[in-house]
Image (cartoon, rainbow, N blue to C red; front, side, top):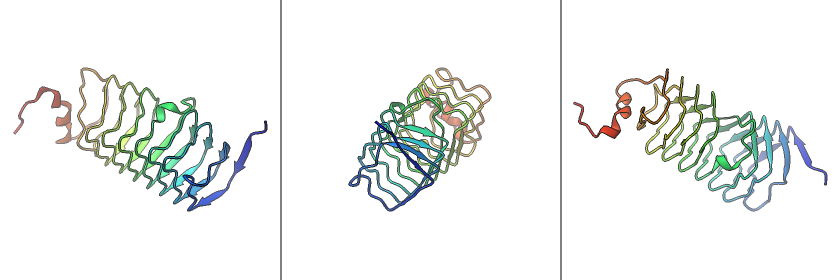
Length: 190
Protein backbone atom coordinates (compact mmCIF):
# COMPACT_ATOMS: atom_id res chain seq x y z
CA UNK A 1 0.00 0.00 0.00
CA UNK A 2 1.40 3.42 -0.97
CA UNK A 3 1.79 5.96 1.78
CA UNK A 4 0.37 9.45 1.24
CA UNK A 5 3.01 12.21 1.08
CA UNK A 6 1.90 15.83 1.48
CA UNK A 7 4.50 18.59 1.19
CA UNK A 8 4.23 22.34 1.71
CA UNK A 9 0.44 22.41 2.04
CA UNK A 10 -1.39 24.97 4.16
CA UNK A 11 -4.49 23.81 6.03
CA UNK A 12 -6.78 26.58 7.33
CA UNK A 13 -9.78 26.19 9.60
CA UNK A 14 -10.13 22.47 8.91
CA UNK A 15 -12.09 20.50 11.49
CA UNK A 16 -10.20 17.20 11.67
CA UNK A 17 -12.66 16.02 14.32
CA UNK A 18 -15.11 15.75 11.45
CA UNK A 19 -12.86 15.54 8.36
CA UNK A 20 -10.42 12.70 9.01
CA UNK A 21 -6.74 13.51 8.61
CA UNK A 22 -5.30 11.23 5.94
CA UNK A 23 -2.58 8.97 7.36
CA UNK A 24 0.81 9.64 5.80
CA UNK A 25 3.76 12.00 5.86
CA UNK A 26 3.23 15.77 6.20
CA UNK A 27 6.43 17.65 5.37
CA UNK A 28 6.76 21.46 5.74
CA UNK A 29 2.99 21.84 6.15
CA UNK A 30 1.22 24.58 8.09
CA UNK A 31 -1.99 24.11 10.07
CA UNK A 32 -3.81 27.36 11.01
CA UNK A 33 -6.84 27.42 13.32
CA UNK A 34 -7.52 23.72 12.80
CA UNK A 35 -9.47 21.53 15.19
CA UNK A 36 -8.10 18.12 16.14
CA UNK A 37 -10.38 17.75 19.20
CA UNK A 38 -10.74 14.03 20.03
CA UNK A 39 -9.27 13.16 16.63
CA UNK A 40 -6.93 10.31 15.84
CA UNK A 41 -3.47 11.29 14.54
CA UNK A 42 -2.09 7.79 15.04
CA UNK A 43 0.63 6.75 12.63
CA UNK A 44 0.77 10.21 10.99
CA UNK A 45 4.24 11.74 10.51
CA UNK A 46 4.79 15.49 10.85
CA UNK A 47 8.18 16.76 9.72
CA UNK A 48 9.08 20.48 9.88
CA UNK A 49 5.40 21.37 10.34
CA UNK A 50 3.86 24.37 12.11
CA UNK A 51 0.60 24.42 14.06
CA UNK A 52 -0.90 27.85 14.80
CA UNK A 53 -3.92 28.34 17.09
CA UNK A 54 -5.06 24.72 16.75
CA UNK A 55 -7.06 22.69 19.29
CA UNK A 56 -5.54 19.29 20.11
CA UNK A 57 -7.66 18.52 23.17
CA UNK A 58 -7.60 14.80 23.95
CA UNK A 59 -6.07 13.98 20.55
CA UNK A 60 -4.75 10.44 20.08
CA UNK A 61 -1.10 10.42 18.94
CA UNK A 62 -0.27 6.72 19.12
CA UNK A 63 2.79 6.03 16.93
CA UNK A 64 2.55 9.54 15.38
CA UNK A 65 5.88 11.27 14.64
CA UNK A 66 6.69 14.88 15.47
CA UNK A 67 10.06 15.99 14.11
CA UNK A 68 11.08 19.66 14.16
CA UNK A 69 7.49 20.73 14.80
CA UNK A 70 6.33 24.03 16.33
CA UNK A 71 3.10 24.65 18.19
CA UNK A 72 2.12 28.32 18.56
CA UNK A 73 -0.95 29.47 20.46
CA UNK A 74 -2.36 25.94 20.52
CA UNK A 75 -4.52 24.15 23.06
CA UNK A 76 -2.79 20.80 23.60
CA UNK A 77 -4.71 19.48 26.62
CA UNK A 78 -4.83 15.86 27.69
CA UNK A 79 -2.41 14.66 24.99
CA UNK A 80 -0.19 11.66 25.84
CA UNK A 81 2.98 12.37 23.85
CA UNK A 82 4.65 9.29 25.34
CA UNK A 83 2.44 7.20 23.03
CA UNK A 84 3.87 8.80 19.89
CA UNK A 85 6.90 7.57 17.99
CA UNK A 86 9.64 8.83 20.29
CA UNK A 87 12.44 8.38 17.74
CA UNK A 88 13.54 11.85 16.67
CA UNK A 89 10.82 13.59 18.68
CA UNK A 90 11.46 17.33 18.45
CA UNK A 91 8.89 20.04 19.14
CA UNK A 92 8.82 23.58 20.49
CA UNK A 93 5.81 25.22 22.14
CA UNK A 94 4.98 28.93 22.36
CA UNK A 95 1.94 30.48 24.04
CA UNK A 96 0.32 27.06 24.32
CA UNK A 97 -2.03 25.57 26.88
CA UNK A 98 -0.69 22.08 27.63
CA UNK A 99 -2.75 21.28 30.71
CA UNK A 100 -3.03 17.63 31.74
CA UNK A 101 -0.72 16.47 28.94
CA UNK A 102 2.02 13.90 29.46
CA UNK A 103 5.61 13.60 28.28
CA UNK A 104 6.31 10.54 30.47
CA UNK A 105 9.76 9.02 29.75
CA UNK A 106 10.19 11.23 26.67
CA UNK A 107 13.48 12.82 25.65
CA UNK A 108 12.84 16.55 25.24
CA UNK A 109 16.45 17.75 25.13
CA UNK A 110 16.71 21.47 24.27
CA UNK A 111 12.95 21.87 23.80
CA UNK A 112 11.61 25.42 24.19
CA UNK A 113 8.44 26.11 26.18
CA UNK A 114 7.71 29.86 25.91
CA UNK A 115 4.82 31.47 27.78
CA UNK A 116 3.02 28.15 28.14
CA UNK A 117 0.44 27.00 30.67
CA UNK A 118 1.83 23.63 31.76
CA UNK A 119 -0.47 22.97 34.71
CA UNK A 120 -0.56 19.33 35.83
CA UNK A 121 1.71 18.14 33.01
CA UNK A 122 3.61 14.90 33.65
CA UNK A 123 7.37 15.03 32.99
CA UNK A 124 8.11 11.92 35.08
CA UNK A 125 11.25 10.07 33.99
CA UNK A 126 11.71 12.50 31.07
CA UNK A 127 15.00 13.92 29.88
CA UNK A 128 14.71 17.72 30.07
CA UNK A 129 18.41 18.45 29.59
CA UNK A 130 18.81 22.00 28.30
CA UNK A 131 15.05 22.63 28.15
CA UNK A 132 13.99 26.27 28.49
CA UNK A 133 10.82 27.05 30.43
CA UNK A 134 10.38 30.74 29.58
CA UNK A 135 7.58 32.45 31.57
CA UNK A 136 5.64 29.21 32.04
CA UNK A 137 3.07 28.34 34.70
CA UNK A 138 4.14 24.95 36.10
CA UNK A 139 1.48 24.58 38.80
CA UNK A 140 0.89 20.94 39.68
CA UNK A 141 3.41 19.77 37.10
CA UNK A 142 4.98 16.41 37.95
CA UNK A 143 8.77 16.06 38.00
CA UNK A 144 9.71 12.62 39.29
CA UNK A 145 13.00 10.87 38.42
CA UNK A 146 13.40 13.57 35.77
CA UNK A 147 16.70 14.65 34.26
CA UNK A 148 16.68 18.45 34.12
CA UNK A 149 20.36 19.24 33.97
CA UNK A 150 21.08 22.66 32.48
CA UNK A 151 17.32 23.33 32.21
CA UNK A 152 16.28 26.98 32.58
CA UNK A 153 13.44 27.75 35.00
CA UNK A 154 14.51 31.36 35.76
CA UNK A 155 11.36 33.09 34.46
CA UNK A 156 8.86 30.33 35.25
CA UNK A 157 6.74 29.98 38.36
CA UNK A 158 4.53 27.74 40.52
CA UNK A 159 6.80 24.72 40.17
CA UNK A 160 7.54 22.17 42.86
CA UNK A 161 10.70 20.15 42.22
CA UNK A 162 12.30 17.71 44.63
CA UNK A 163 16.09 17.86 44.04
CA UNK A 164 16.49 14.54 45.89
CA UNK A 165 14.57 12.54 43.24
CA UNK A 166 15.41 14.61 40.17
CA UNK A 167 18.73 15.44 38.51
CA UNK A 168 18.96 19.24 38.63
CA UNK A 169 22.72 19.74 38.17
CA UNK A 170 23.46 23.15 36.63
CA UNK A 171 19.74 23.90 36.19
CA UNK A 172 18.95 27.63 36.43
CA UNK A 173 16.45 29.08 38.88
CA UNK A 174 15.69 32.57 40.19
CA UNK A 175 14.30 33.95 43.44
CA UNK A 176 11.65 33.81 44.76
CA UNK A 177 10.42 30.89 42.63
CA UNK A 178 13.46 28.82 43.66
CA UNK A 179 11.55 28.19 46.89
CA UNK A 180 9.66 25.57 44.86
CA UNK A 181 12.69 23.34 45.47
CA UNK A 182 11.78 23.24 49.17
CA UNK A 183 8.05 22.43 48.91
CA UNK A 184 8.39 18.85 50.09
CA UNK A 185 9.68 20.00 53.47
CA UNK A 186 6.44 21.89 54.29
CA UNK A 187 8.41 24.68 55.93
CA UNK A 188 7.46 28.32 56.37
CA UNK A 189 9.81 30.85 54.82
CA UNK A 190 9.26 34.52 55.59
